[in-house]
Image (tube, rainbow, N blue to C red; front, side, top):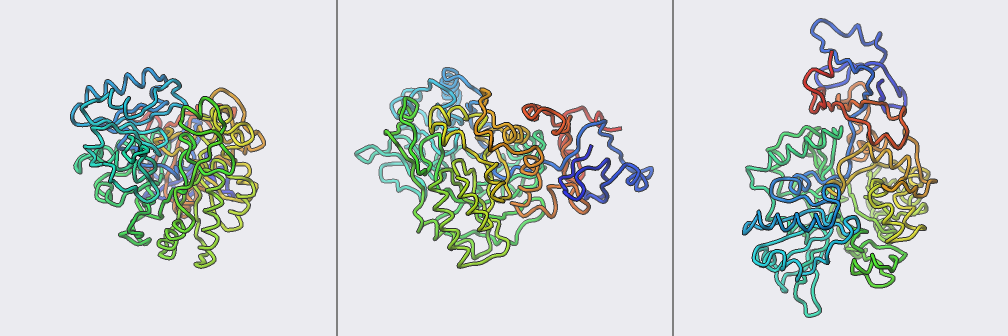
Length: 531
């Protein structure tokens, strides 16, 4: 079975490939005359062939670092129990010593019972050596006193634009860093040395290939890493979104790169993470033991990272130069601000095909999706939040009204948006098949169904992991569907997602991944999938 994601030819029996491109799609009888004695024939043996999955919102370079040899992985998906997390941190400090320790994945909402990571606790765990612990969201980092000295941070260190360092009432650093620029400063010393970058990046590409992914984005690309990326050997197509920065401009133009690696956009963070209390919403967080443990005051509401004027300045710096804009916004107040700013930007600088992107949109309302659709704005939805944090959203943070209606894919499609799904790796593992299950079932890890009216069909969910994210990244002309002329970017699944129960789509196995007609991952020994 071939699922093409081409509405004019939804299914086929066979595909012919030459020089990495698709040259024919049809029945076996139609394809057979194109073969000769030199043709390599891959018999799927009843398996399902699809376009390779597209991850439109990942962090390739960041995940390469935090899952690489210089950082210790303490994510809930790796270490679920709080006591084990603390033990792993202490073991890492003993192992790393004076070279400094960085642990990634701290999440008190999922790893229930973690201690409060204040400066006193951090200094007790590592009294003499640098220790940095990154929150699983990527929006918060904790650092001890030795790390502050090591990083060159002091009470006189200014807050970066759109980010901040936590401070005591007296102005001293309290061992916290919020949002991309401040968190990135804490992570920077743990970046690979120049000569080690290719290996850690190639390992990241391999992880993506194992999930059936043939195209991904880097949604927090640091322009200083261009040489490192160029030295690697991508087995996925990479689309880069450079972080907006103080210089308010990129060192390259939108006409850059090739079909394998290309920078297409600029990324900004309008607000932060729901898990640490800093998304800008029109409604408050719940007041309970969980939110008190997060340090939130009663009826807390998060705040935006930028004023409308600052966000306008960013848009004016990049959009007229031809860049696509992508903006992280979880809270509905943040969404309103971005739509206000972008509406004025589009009026001042009309562009027929801008594909402006809203990222995550956790609490975006149906009327906001309609407004976005009228402006031609698209959205990438973090639907996997429902699986890992669905119960937390309802019981601990926002209650049933706002928590259950998180990641409203159904409302987005009803409004006419073209949407995609993502995993924001390393926040959650790259798992496009689970995203499809979540969009169709809206079941949390405990089995609770959240806002069933927001469920979508399997076909709609498949589009959101293939052709529509390719379109969002201006690559639908070369990949995302199985059509003549496009690259032979494929995933082989051990079952057709239409033929299993929706809750079991997440368990379908990826048998092989192909990029431009070359097998870049196989679950089987060489030759086992072929005849």
